[in-house]
Length: 243
Image (cartoon, rainbow, N blue to C red; front, side, top):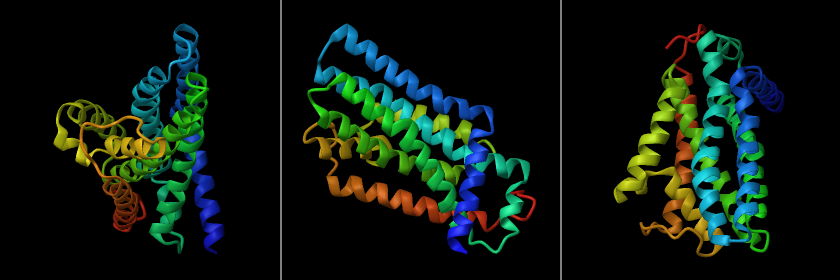
């Protein structure tokens, strides 16, 4: 029963993501990332440091969170908005199982449309230093999973999850995260950047001394806590999907 429910919910999630126009962006973003990586390599040649900066500024700070936002809001928000979530809520399926199934789809999208392109772009930019590509890929997966849990919670809390998510990425993660050291202790970008540094053995040395244990624990807490809170909030929906 559980496996069947997971497959059914995941299939509905995939249809929700790729059955709408926003799903096209999931194909465009990785093409832009790899295309720019090829352009940078053609113009600047082999330069590991330039490759790291390019991957962080474009792939890690832009493509990965945007893919997570589009994918996660795509599997939850549309069904809540149009009321089709009632189909799932009417079934004897755990709300947390529904959320986990949806998040598996979202994280899968991050893996395919953010992590794999990051690996390809990293190899293009620094073929002689494969650890750069591997480290950024692992960091993108960790950060993407954290973002998915956060955006899933936003999707069940507000009908404007996409707008709120964009504001969060631009203001908290982008503007304030780059200006205030204290913000970085509560920043998904900083946590996952620390993972990159850990895996890559010194890549992207951060100005805030976040311990690897803190960074990994923060990601785990956000993934677990966000998933549980989303399921808990979903239990409060009535069968029309109204808040």
